[in-house]
Length: 200
Image (cartoon, rainbow, N blue to C red; front, side, top):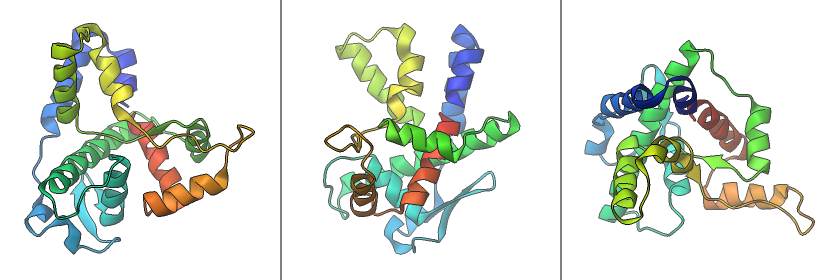
């Protein structure tokens, strides 16, 4: 969806749309008052434009957003989950827009992306803006490529490639990573990646 905006709406106007989306996506969440960990995996914790986000999806998205161990009772973990929840809200809004524009993706497309080792997770645009601002200040990032960073690199998740010694897709390694690192089901992961392709 963001890629569609970038490719079909030119220049400053396209970037303005992304900035407006970032503003619209700034929301507050009721469940944080009670603590994220007090709901079951199937319970709905956020509803956005009719789209329901459950605890299992939040847990999965939190896991895929970090490649290091963070203690569940730490302030860093609470901040991460809040940021991840904001990303899922933004994704829900993008999916609603995509439906209106008949933008879709299939399970086969999601599996093809997984086999290539390309995974995505929607991160809050506000967080990406902070990251880009830091890179522009210290890393020499040119302002002309901000949209590419926001839409492309900023939404990639680092899980590695699941290949055997012959370079073929290793379903066993894939299944173990999804089950034990992300604590998620394979079919659910594929569906999450299908949704990400639409939002992307």
